[in-house]
Amino acid sequence: MGVAALPASLVPWSRLNRRFMTIGLSDALAYRGTFILGIVFAMIPLATSLLLWLAIYRAGAVGLSIAGFDLHGMLSYYLVMHLLGLVYVVEDVQWDVTQQIRGGTLNSYLMRPISYCLVQWDLKMAAVLVAAVIALIPASLVVIAARSILVLPAAAWQWGAFVVAVLVGIQIAFLLSLCIGLSAFWFLETSGFLMAAFPMQMILSGSLFPLELLPKPVYAVVGNLPWTYMTYFPLQIWLGRLDAAAVARGLLFQAGWLAALLGFSTWLWSRGIRRYEAVGG
Amino acid sequence: MAAVEATALTKVFTTVKRRGGLTGAFRGLFRPERTEVRAVEGASFALEPGELVGFLGPNGAGKTTTLKMLAGLLHPTSGSASVLGFTPWERRDDFRRRISLVMGAKNQLWWDLPARDSLALNREIYGVPYDRWKKTVDEMIEMLEVGNRLEVQVRELSLGERMKFELIACLLHEPQVLFLDEPTIGLDVVSQQRIREFLRDVNARRRTTILLTSHNMADIKGLASRVLLINHGRIMHDGPLATLIERWSGTKRLALTASRPLVRSELAAFGEVLALDGPAAVLCVPRDRAPAVTGEVLAALPVLDLTVEDPPIEDIIAEIFQETRPPTSAAKAPKAESSGGEDHEWE
Image (cartoon, rainbow over all chains, first blue to last red; front, side):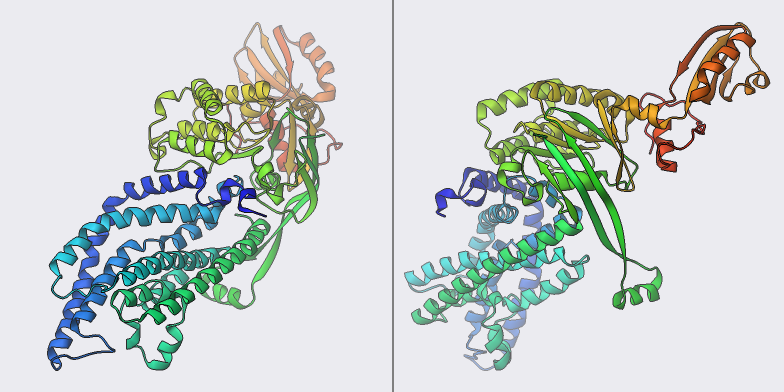
């Protein structure tokens, strides 16, 4: 079956799905106030981390390197990780999906000729777009204020690889979150699970600290999990910590995880919906 | 071919019984106590194209479950159904383009957007050509008098306005079959009437087959020529409203006006006195005795005016649901306390 045979609901760039994206844009813009407030308050933990690491490096010898990070590298890690975090606004999908499954709003999607998961994707990608535009302001402020210490990609190919890795990373983050959300088909009460999963994801994606700080055997495992490929991998490219071969290998792994998660979420959806039909919403 | 056909449709839910208290919750963790709920039990019925059928039953009787199965949201435990020739729960796009399900208690419009955007979205979902969409929407907003509310965010609409837009959104692709679950729930009398007129028009002009559940008897009386009565998951009656009254009501009402004030003691001999106000009285008598009692009353009292009526449909149905007796059993006077207003909800 060729692409031409697919119904519009399954083609991401169809008019229908673009319409959903437009709705996602209005939705995201409607809540821009909350978003901006979020940016402001997210500065507090960022500042705490920066000051902490500044103190650690100052207390150590000149030219101290921790897990391969010098002071500028470490500060850049947190700054760029923070900016990425502002744009990766796809994790809400696990809350939305859970709520729609349990509240029965899923029904109004099911009885229309549309694809539920793709609609969620449309909405979240629109939110990412809005977040990226709004985050440009704090991003430029950071770049200007921290230009003396900020590590930037040196070569053009690194910039390119970084952008690709971020785009795929956002998809991985979306799919991971979607899978967690779809678990609501089986579990009556998932909010506790979601609460527990969230900090785990923060750690595994390297949002709290560089993954190399983990004990070697732990890192050997964690470094290959899909969460690593959300934000940590693109960041490694940005900081110039990977050579061309490592970047290529990483992109390949990323693509592999993307495909695996796509398959897994599709499977979860089809199994879950069968259960939903049996139990009701 | 029937537009909607259900054959021995059955749905059994298994639910885990929750025990109260900490120890109860703890025991439930290891040995969950499961109970079976037979929501729909062998329901068989058919709707011809263009028919408007009322679906009646108390809360938990299985109405919504039946509608959900017919709309393809639930898989039945056993039995089969065919809607426009499709098996609903396969949820093919061709099927979904031809039906709609509106639930009065559930919102299907986009909460943060103006109603107009939700209508535009539905146009895209169903691939309705712009001109046709515009024509349908204009027609419907005029009929429902919500033209000036198109640009208002859905969250800011009143319940009645929201329901009206809900209906428009679900009808603009001109479905051949429409399932309506409590379309007038919580609405004022004027809005209810508007919606009824609207549905009557949709059914008459577009030949839309409609299956409608409602607790509001005015909806059923005003719209449905035929009713399906369901209780404890079983279909108990399928036919015109009038035959339902004949079949189930064991009583008639005699409303009389005399030339002088009446007293209760002189009326009690003829039947149960339901109302007495000066010279006007309402008596309840067994259906088969109604002609004889009428003669006796006329002979004994100075009657100016006398009518024989069926009891209010609400009372009959309430009685059926309370007793669920077989239709052949002996007539029994209903314990009627209210005379049943036009828009009386019997929930």
